[in-house]
Image (cartoon, rainbow, N blue to C red):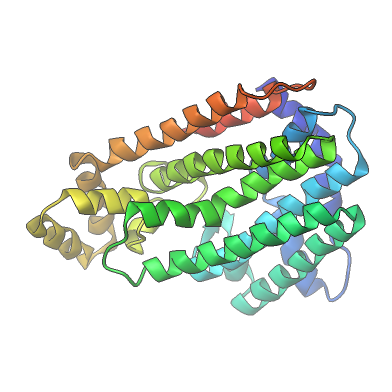
Length: 318
């Protein structure tokens, strides 16, 4: 993963700059520094640079600011998502709303979003700004659909895939498209890279859902089985539900007499029904689609940076 390491090294000064959050009152800035300092793989800003490198090798201030904006926006969504999901852990540490409180997390998230627009204003590229706004709108719509799904008894996997396209994949698509535009890509290539980001994002989220149920807390950085306890209509859950009969569905619901029994029983049913393997295979199909799509690009730059990112996302440890 030498190429990805190089991108992350290139990003270090820019990330350090946004982690250092001056301002007063400190109570609203410290949570921003806290969540940004928790790390993560910094994949989204790395994707901005990876797409840029397909067309240009020398970074400009503008592309680094877009990378910062993407990382800040992603963390803004996490601040609010953790409240909505009532998540106690983020990247293995206390979430902001647990460490402080809900009101502080909301206000810090709002301030972080304002800082995102400050970065976009500094870049001053109207095309990129319009693409960002379209992406942010879809992301909010996807989050709402995700919440609405929790109230439904059944959700089609077609509807679920469209929801995760909005909630997760559009940000990856924007990251690639914006990086490419600033690197000098044609509009056609920019749109193709956006579509490539959608495929990457769908595979990424399917794998993320899989790891939420079948990963390990130490590696995933959050409690395993959270989606199961909330009966979230993930692809895994929907596929399991469609494959089992009425009696088995009753047994699944009856297992919720305790958290431990629910997680264990539902995981067993996901496995025995074939939903576990089917979901994992679908995630791999999207990865293959992404890699094949990347081969269609003929640019003067280096595609290997983005290839490494796709392979890394596909090979996350369970």
